[in-house]
Amino acid sequence: MAIVTKITEGIKVSVSTQYMPEYSNPLQFHFVFAYNVRIENNSSSTVQLLRRQWYIHDSLRNLREVEGEGVIGQQPVLEPGDVHKYVSGCNLKSEMGKMGGYYLMEKLVDGTRLKVRIPDFTMVVPCRHN
Image 1 (tube, rainbow, N blue to C red):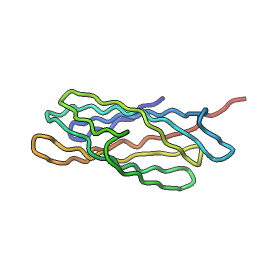
Image 2 (cartoon, helix red, strand yellow; image 1 turned 45 degrees about the vertical axis):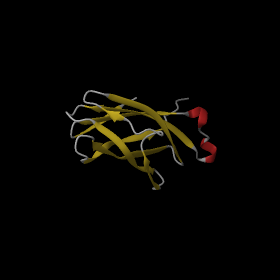
Image 3 (cartoon, one colour; image 1 turned 180 degrees about the horizontal axis):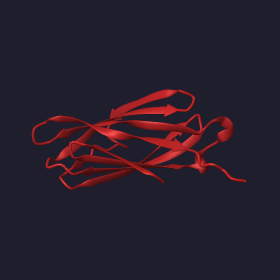
Image 4 (cartoon, rainbow, N blue to C red; image 1 turned 45 degrees about the horizontal axis):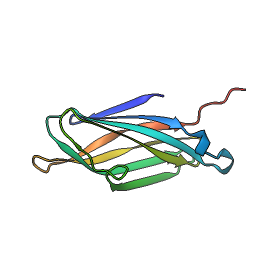
């Protein structure tokens, strides 16, 4: 399970993925993946995650955009040195795809907004060997 990382203004976002065969149905072009996200505040400011914007691509050239408040129903506040982790999921219509995007965060000291990049990460069904 490879981990990809991106740092924006001291906010480090790391993501790893896992194929979920128990929730997938390849015969109906339904492939489910879990992704684990770790957000580390290595800046000197307290920040709050307000919104997220995802761009989801599959190998059939479909693009979905998902935008909304927080992550999994939360808008965490991260003090300097804090870490926030969560797990979520994505379904694709093909055996591989990628996701990426950004979090909109706010520095609580002055209200400055930051677009914190989420690194592009791939989702691939593991090869089966007979």
